[in-house]
Image (cartoon, rainbow, N blue to C red; front, top):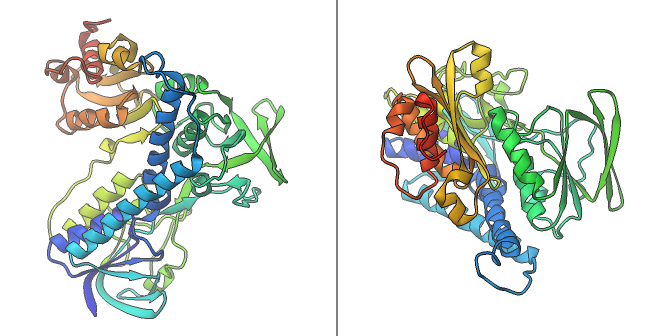
Length: 464
């Protein structure tokens, strides 16, 4: 059977691309190497990690704040097996939802490894071998964890995020290599359950791709959970013997530290996953980082073959892949879609949450752009005091002469949801004063955004 479009990979970018293609009247197929749809995000990434983050936050609150709220309970106990089971149930329900959407939109699903035979023919090697004829192809095969070449990953004691989502015990001490989003989120999961967490980060701050203030504030907040940090340290050796893992790292001064724990989570980033695609058979090239090269329309050098998500340049974010999936589907059908990559938000689902959109202060300094800044702490909010979520702040960056908002950075309760207002304001090129003059419900966390914009406009916050 011949298709108008075939999508390889069923993660957020792939399945969204397939649905949008089908909505636009294209006969669409999707190929997925695993038995379940949803890719890394739904199966071993975004969804399961958030399920565990929510479960462990409930436990942490029961241990630490219930008494102050006037709730008296016997000492709570961790049932890690039930937490993992609930996480698995959430994953199954979400993946089943994607199955339903494929059927609803009449998208044919093929399970197996999809390999290009030529630019219009894909061989699917699953239980049976099939050949799929297609006019156009969208590659959406995602990414996999990056591992340092000298680290032997045994997936028992030296693990990736995939194994960290299914541990059978609460580690007494977990060493995390990498202080980025994945490391901080999964570290939070186990720190709340009583694990000692040690983070070793090569750069001088955690979550280094975000505004520097966010990293400093998150470090302060997670230290309260018992995190310890070795920033500016380069890992030089990782070894596992029995139930003990040893990590050696060097500081910039050349001093060596040895840290011993029971698990080592390697979370230094991810790399594009194109294994088995047979890109050379279709005439497609990758760059030095292993990313598929595409033009401004996300089309490869081969007409009719597109690539989206983690296999192309840009942030490795599920919602970025989704936008690109829609973009390609609409481009194929003659529409003129647009993506503003500056306004794709980034989020860290620790507690407090961290969320950012637009330029960081460091980027504006590097550009030499004249800007002003306004910030407002959560501890000055009535809503935050009521919920006992007083850690964090909102930081707004605006152009010094025009007052146009250039960046919004939030660390605090519900920052992941709050950042949408920053995206909206910046999409419409609002000024800080525009947002400051909008009515914000009281008492809410969003009042911190209004107050930060007041501070950025002419330093006139009301409640500080």
